[in-house]
Length: 304
Image (cartoon, rainbow, N blue to C red; front, side, top):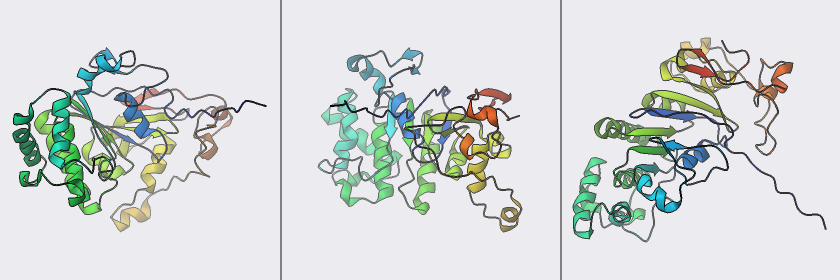
């Protein structure tokens, strides 16, 4: 009997980036490109099979769970699904207080006042502490998720598509809340999203991801005004513009075909089967990330 071969997916492959203290780095790309996996790998919720993750100069991948615990307090996550990320058997007050107990930041007598303060911070009425998650709307649950992340008094928060499951009318409220909290508390964010308008509003720099790799990273004004990578141009040209006159004059960048399977990514540049700029070298030689303009990097043979 032949042994069954297992396919291996390299969800994140060769990513090299840094996030500066106090900034928001936006991470965008199509569904399945590895954005959420990258965020979870940074927090060590998913252990990477190779490479390094450094937080405040400390190498995380070599640490055991006991050694990681004090660092986990400083690194928190706001999850995408406000419906599935809360325990339905716990009151929302208990859910927000749990990180305080885990990291010994408060005892039971102190926690209720602290949770009430956090509820006010995220725009919720402290009188609702004893209710259960099913009694709240999606936007309210996401505010509870943000309060739970803040309960550990973190320095760095990964926001994993925190508004994609919410109504458009609620999304702006949550983004404005995250922005206000960053400015008030001095937080650092990795903001994962596929909505380019949301990322533009909140981010200082933006990294664009395709099939597990970063293909462009730049300050947001530079990236939106003059994108260098064909994939970034395609993403931006697909985003609607509310001005009809501007929309009618825009030049479209269209990609051919479908996204290749991450089980068998193309050789060379991973975008080359879909790229209108592709030449023979693109199928053989993987482009290196290089600085084209000050602070603006792209991984394309023809960027510049």
